[in-house]
Image (cartoon, rainbow, N blue to C red; front, side, top):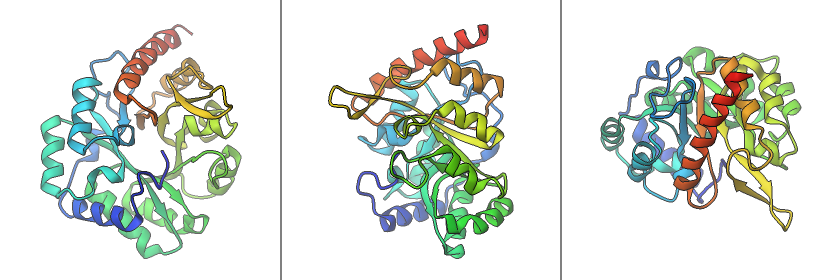
Length: 283
């Protein structure tokens, strides 16, 4: 998921989140360590969706798509989805659709420790166990303290070619000597675009993979990267699924798609994941 998506400015984003954070509380105890409760046989994996996938519709319509069409009940919040909604409206919609918040992001962290704290306060009010982030390298000392104090992990989102957090070894070198609460949100599609193996990212970061955006990319006839169904591009879906099952992954596992017709593609992806689960269990 790109950070500066849908032309949502940082001021607009922070203002919208602050209004929600003032009164929203969703208990994180309902998230990690539990199965998704979905209608799909996913081997106990807590699969949900990154709401950026459904950025073409309102937050309410996104929740309807999640629960009615995809039959999932976990969501990682794309900040643009909650802009302009009151805390009461967001709480009511989540309660009405029986949806649990698994994470929040992508958000920036910078040199200003007080501004970083503001974001953690908002995350605490949201009740999320982790923040998907794009941190300035100068923020890590601040994040060491804040992740420990709040008990909320900060997980770097790899953004693809040309970004400072595009390469596995660069991200690992930046965080390896810091708190284990600073980890990785493994965006499998963007690692593929950057010429990296998302499965290797799992192996390098291990239990510091606190979150994952599961998506795939392939090159079209013009040599340009484009979204595709899981396993149709560079992603070894069965191998990734086996890693998740072997490690009994209970972090924020979010299906994501950035192209057109997201519901139809994600419905097909759910079938692919179920098949990959069945295959992985035999290996």
